[in-house]
Image (cartoon, rainbow over all chains, first blue to last red; front, side):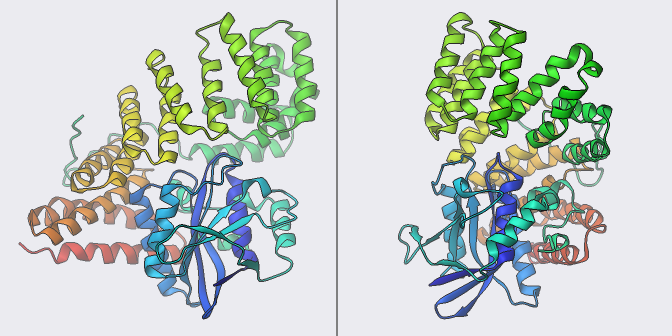
Length: 190
Length: 327
């Protein structure tokens, strides 16, 4: 299975990590199965910059599912992304794996994307994302099958970083502190 | 601790005094003012950051460096406090050049000072030189064995290296001595959460609640943690704690409203499946859910269109579970 990520989705994950350099961050990946061996990652919904806890996670998931059902683009949930708190920590936490496994219950090719914090930069030269896939209930394994849909992705992300778009970036945690802030982040114009 | 639920009929509003905007928004307000220029606005921003103990080192550098370099006379005898704050922000941002420059200045001003030795330790940490930093703190602790700051820095080093279990063990030793250190309980709770040790994280929050029984945030977080552990008894416990959190703050506590919705729904689903305590699903949980739904509809009336539709749609679907629980 190949995974192709849009500039918008890539940028949002990076902005989320940049906004909260001292915390773990995570979110849900949206996209569609565009052919029998390709998943197109179109967008992400950023969830938390705290350690994920069940009640708010469940409510957030219900809202994301509702959003997908109502979306004109026919998006579905295709995975979960996570950045660890510690710089060079590449471990897959238990909650992170559990969430991704649960998503596979709805979409068998749901993936897990970990942010490699050591590759985060205001002048990105390479992708900071590492794809993990899991087949038939085995372990999550690193996979090289994640590509950009657009060759200018890193340059576009660099622009977003230069414009300090993380300032207006909203995740679900932030939305709960201030419900007038939108976790759909349409205002960022990505 | 047994916490009483608030009856939904007569909702008590035990309001603690809450400011109109939350602390993070306030930082951005102060930063906007500082952008307009002027040493006074820069000083206000730094002072607010220090009092509210929020971590925005990039802002401290941006507005603090011009402040301490050009307006030292305006800061009077507070100068070195602000200078130290900017130095620590330089460590936090990994600005080695600035760190060395400012450290040199502060060394000259306070030769042989223990406080400066601690700053040296933090500088080593910021460079990732963890062994040297640990040695620095050990040396200080030889001179000053009850230095809590150095003990906590040593724990942080283990956390930074990813050796979480060692950090937890050291924390437990530390907290036996300094059991009133609220910051430490909070940090230990986070460490446990990152390791998936929900029961131990809950114990930390019990200590935090005891230390500050008027703080609505501690009850809310505790409820989230016990709900995560799961099971009908924990859903009921979480429901009590979310409710108590709301009795302390029902104006800016959306998390607890959502948590209470989740609890009511989880309990009703559980009752529905098990065919036991059916009344519970309909009565208490149903009433609480109704209360929550009303409050959330109120809050979301000001929200952006799409999210409002989504959220109210979700609430409506959830509420259906209460219609079908039969007597």
